[in-house]
Image (cartoon, rainbow, N blue to C red; front, side):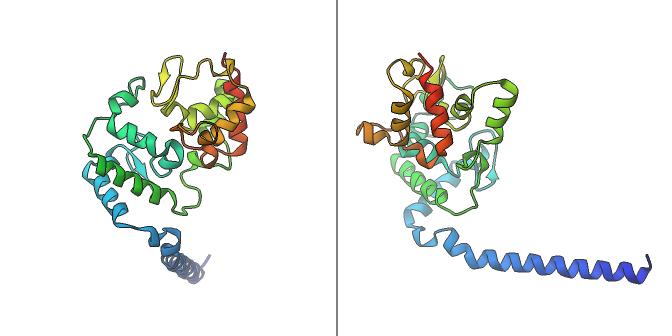
Length: 234
């Protein structure tokens, strides 16, 4: 290869890369308003963002790809644990994580700040970010679920239960959250069909239920798998 050929390869490659970068940047900025639901950016959402920063939540949690990895990703936290689940964890972390190896300090967040945080998390969760983060995607078993099925030998339903946040609220054999009831013997009183119906629409079965519907958090396949798994617990 001559120096002249190398020069033209370098020049064309650089200009092409720069054109693609500038085009992608322009397209992203053009769609920010729509993808980020700017019209829903209320004063309460802004107040929640300020509370999020005030208590340095990013030191432990990731949101929209930024932050620490000690604690769960919060991008889709409303869909995963529900508004009441968030309130319980922030208000009483010593109870919510009593049986978990992962701990969260009680920051003594006020009730108004918690309400603002929930509004902020709801707004973030509705941003169209191409199905991020992957662990909350409804379209597939996550990498963690696939590894558990392949390497540990657990059923797909057990893998979903352990990786999709069910244990944030429920416990099995003394391990897991305390917000919801322990599920060690749930299969003794409910069939897989009944469990599946409840998980999809808890308030449709029990109007007093505080559990968020999981049909927005889990795929139909995951809902069926976890219902079949829970029905075996007797």
